[in-house]
Image 1 (cartoon, rainbow, N blue to C red):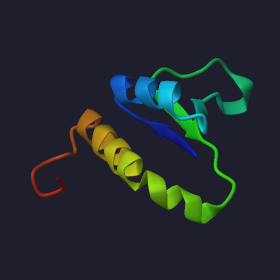
Image 2: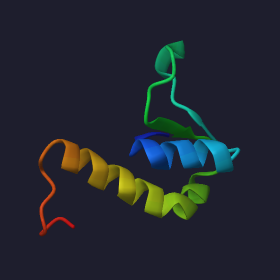
Image 3: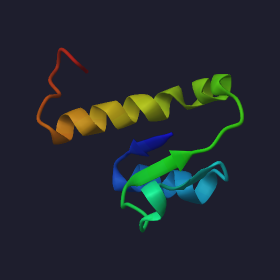
Length: 71
């Protein structure tokens, strides 16, 4: 699962969580502020709900789509 995050959040996850690695689609160089979460079972991703929420909000903000109704 690849996610775009604020740079500080991506760096923290990469440093602290061994299940998180740099996102490298199709073997390309790592993408800045993107991470990949590798878990064995789909249900394990529930523990990362806050990371998914942060990612969605970050991308919406970057696209100018985040407003108080979506927050």
